[in-house]
Amino acid sequence: MLVVYGDSVYPISIINLDISEKSNTNGTNISTKYYTTQEITYIKTKSFVSTVSVNTTSNRNIENVLSNRSVPSLTDAELKQIKRTWYNSPIVVMKYRLIFFWNEKSGCSFWKSLLQYIQGLKRDDMHNPYVNGLKYLINFEDNDIISMMYNDSWTKAVFVREPRERMLSSYLDKGLNDGFIMVNCKRTVKTFSEFLELAKQCPNAHWESQVRAPKYFYKKMMIGKMADISTFTEKLLTKIGAWNETVKIWLHSKDSEKKSRSHAQNAGDKLLQYYNNTKLQDVIFEMFEDDYNVFNFERKYFDFNKNGDKAVNTVIS
Image 1 (tube, rainbow, N blue to C red):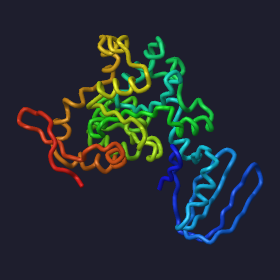
Image 2: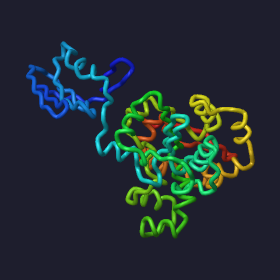
Image 3: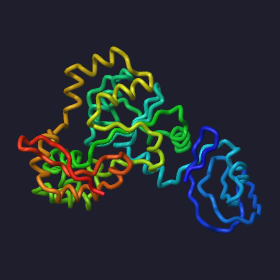
Image 4: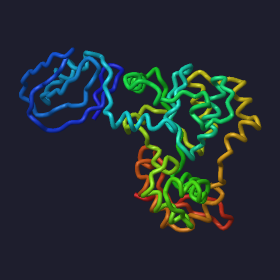
């Protein structure tokens, strides 16, 4: 459930209990008894921490808490989920107040290169956080991260790829790389089916879910998909104020095209070869249920005509 107060939205969870209001303000414990039927939790700020019980016929206590106009907090688990690791944390573009949630095997080379370009960064090793010049969310203090995530003046965006296409790309690039698989998963695979089973047992950012923040954040986040990368790029850069003729020229340059395709494995062209039945598609529908739900991907079986052209058929409930 979300509580809306002014122009802010506060995530809360509700459980049926009769308990009193307890709060801590500047180190002073306060307890006020109310007869209630619901408890609202998860309103926590730097200066005000409160567990509030409210009567279903009155919003008085909600108003009292939200009148502080403080930013809600995030649990340690949620902060860890958002920050991730030093190697794959969301990219922060301070100049344009952008937090970009990128994903491995979802055009990440293109996006890192583009975000370097609009900031005037000329670094070749775009994938190495130590030298690529990009700023990452994990480098910020937790309190700053919380403020940025809840502040609407910061644009939050994510770019994702249809899970079947992404997993095939991961297999062709990483699964068939025996050295990579041995180092990360301690054994190799011979088939795409074996790779999918290994992916369930061996966590790795190249084949983990693209849902990398609490789900309620995605309701207000710009979501781009591989199928409309050009349209989304212009839309995003226009929103943050970075779209101009120079960027347009760069996007159509050979240098940009080379970087954006540096890890492409022609997965789209090989869908027919690897998804010629519904069994493996069902496996991925189940593995990436969150991706399909959060990013509104259609769970339809691929259907190929005699020429090998991809279409979709049969909606999966």
